[in-house]
Image: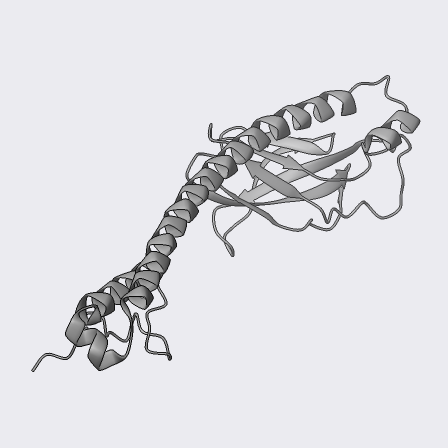
Length: 217
């Protein structure tokens, strides 16, 4: 003998109350309940009225409507997120390019640099410890180039060497150096996970390696 509603009584859809947690499954379950009992015999046996069955059917119809609205809103939200991410990539690339251009201009004073959030130039060679970078970030671009940015002094013969490797624990490879606080790795390759770090150098002296920054595009 087949039990009533047996297609709907599954462990994956039933909550501890005996009702499905999924809205669509709950509505289907209620429809089967109404179909089985909303008859003269069913009403007499259950003690429920036609008005109660109608109210239940209406509630489930509204539930299905709200589920549809939620799915539409979710699709709209996903589209909005994609727009934000695309615009952020465009805006960030422009901002970084302008920062790099301003940072390399010799007419920029320390006062302007401080106001613009750019690193203050270190125009006097120092025999002391070289700067340690701890805020290295890497942003990948669909073109296959990766943009690196960090904070630190510049000038005074100071340069930053940029190293990369393809996997954690692999060998570090020098890919270039910069006298500013950013670097564009133009041949990083699309669809490749890379790790980066920078090391400050002045002459033959080297500072401590920076934090690692990972990027995948």
